[in-house]
Image (tube, rainbow, N blue to C red; front, side, top):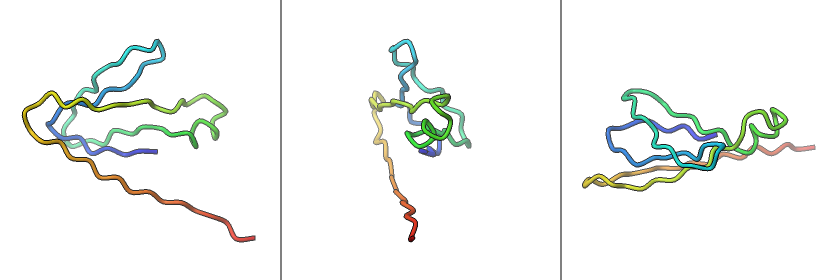
Length: 75
């Protein structure tokens, strides 16, 4: 899953089931949650992975920071 803190810089778009891209509305002070492949498996396909892209059309810089965590089991 991806958690995105919203800012006032536009550019994020998600791909709809029909295939067209929709700009994500900015709601300041909120988190946007993109489900990933794990959620797809956990829900037997009910919650799809979110294809997304960023096209920065604003005249300001846009920053992203990613962090990853993996849990392994020891048997």
